[in-house]
Image (tube, rainbow, N blue to C red; front, side, top):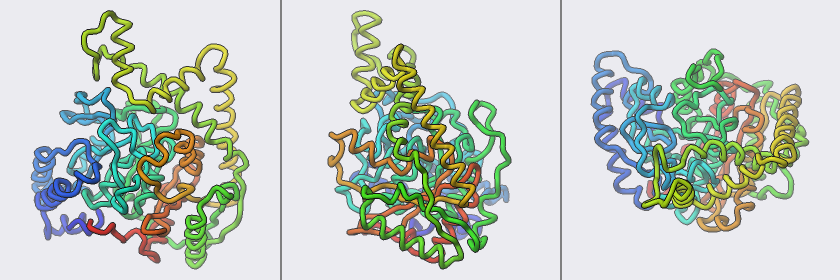
Amino acid sequence: MHEHTLAQLSRALQSKTLSSVELTEHYLKRIEQLDPLLNSFITVAPELALAQAKAADARIAGGTATALTGIPLAHKDLFCTTGLRTSCGSKMLDNFIAPYESSVTSRFIDAGAVTLGKTNMDEFAMGSSTESSFYGPTRNPWNTEHVPGGSSGGSASAVAARLCAAATGTDTGGSIRQPAGFTALTGLKPTYGRVSRWGMIAYASSLDQAGPMARTAEDCALMMQVMAGFDERDSTSVDVPVADYSAGLNDSLKGLRIGLPKEYFSDGLDAETADAIHAAVKQFQSLGAEVKEISLPNAELAIPAYYVIAPAEASSNLSRFDGVRFGYRCEDPADLTDLYKRSRGEGFGPEVKRRIMVGAYALSAGYYDAYYLQAQKIRRLIKNDFMAAYEEVDVILCPTSPTPPFKIGEKIDDPVSLYLTDIYTITANLAGVPGVALPAGFANGLPLGMQLLGNYFSEARLLNIAHQYQQVTDWHSRAPAGY
C-alpha cells in the first residue's frame, strides 16, 4: 500500500478497494517499525488517526468524500492542533497543547484526511538540516548518516520513507524545497499569502509560507487544492481565486520559456548537481520548452539580507515565550527577571538564541537604519530582479542546494556554512514568489534536487511543468532501500 502515491491511494479509497482504516493501520505499523532510526516524528497519534479513518470510511460510504478523504498525512510540528502537542521542535513548547486548530490542519480535517502525527523539525524552523531539534536529528532514509535537510526534514524523511502518503511543511528560506531536494520528493512553496498562516507558529512573519511535500507534482496539486484559499483571520492572506491545480497538469510545455540564472551556476555549485540540472534542461527542451540564460544580479545579496530580516522578525515573534503564559517555565525563580532569563535561557536551543540576539541587535536603536532598513531595500531589489526576469521567461530553473545531502554533524558547528546551503532558495522567499522543488537525479545514492520559480500565483503552471517532467523521468518514483 505504501508504494502507491497519494493520487493512487485516493482512487483506491474512492473505489472502495481499500479502506482508510486498513491504510492507516498499515502506516502506523510502518512508523512503529521504521521511525525509531529515522526520528521523523515527534508525536504519533494512533487513536486520533484511527478515529478519523473510521469517520473517513463512513464518509466515503455515504458518497460525500473529497479527493483526500481517508488519506493518512503528517503535519510539521508547528501547526497548532487541538488536543495534540505542538512543540515546534523546542523544549520551550514541549508541554504545549494548543486549544485551537490551525487553518491548514482544519482544512485537511474538513476534507476528511487522517492525521498520523506531527513531524520533527529544526527548533522554531531555524535551520537547514533538522539537527537543531530538541528531540534529536532526523535521518535521511536514502542514507541515514546524512541529513534530510531542514527545517521540514521530519516531513521530508517521513514521506520519503513511505511512513505517510504526504505531509505539510513550511518554507521561510527554503525549508520545503531544500529537504524535498535532499530526499527525492516534490515540494511546493506557494506565493506568499496563498496559504493561511493562522495557527502556524511564526518564525519570520513576512517570509513564512506553508506548502505540501509529496512524491509527485500530482500529489502536491491535490494537497494545494485543500490548503490554498483566503482566510480573514490571517492579515497576510491574499483574497485571490484558487485555481484548479489538477486541471492543467497534462498541458503541453511547447513554447514554455525557461530561464537559467547565470549567478546560480557559478563555482559554488557541485559539479554533479550542475550536470543533473543540465540533463533536466535537455528533457524540458525535448518537451518543447525554450531555454535561455538570464541574470538575477542581486542574488548574491540574498544571504546577508535574509539573515538580517529573518532574525529581526524572529526576535520579535519569540518575545512571547517568556515563561509566564504558556510553554516552559524554569523552576523556583527568584524574581520576575530571573523567571524571564532562565525560562528563555533553558527553553531555547543555541541556534534560536543566536538568531534572537542577531535580530535584537539589528533592530536596536542606532542599528535599525544600518541593518534592517538596508536589508529591506535589498529585498526590493531582489524582487525587481524577478519581475524583470519574468518579462523574458515564464519560469526560472535552478538548483535547490549547492551540494547533495551532507553528513549529520558536518556543518552543525559552523553556522555560516549551514546558512550558505540556502543560497539558492532564499531569494524566492524575499521576493514572495512560488517555487516547486523536484528530484533531478542521484549522486552516490543521494538525491539531487532542482527548483522551478514562477511569477506570483503561478502554482498551477509550476505543477504542470513538474508533472510533465515526471512523465518522462523516474527519479520521483524511486524509493530508498529498505523502505
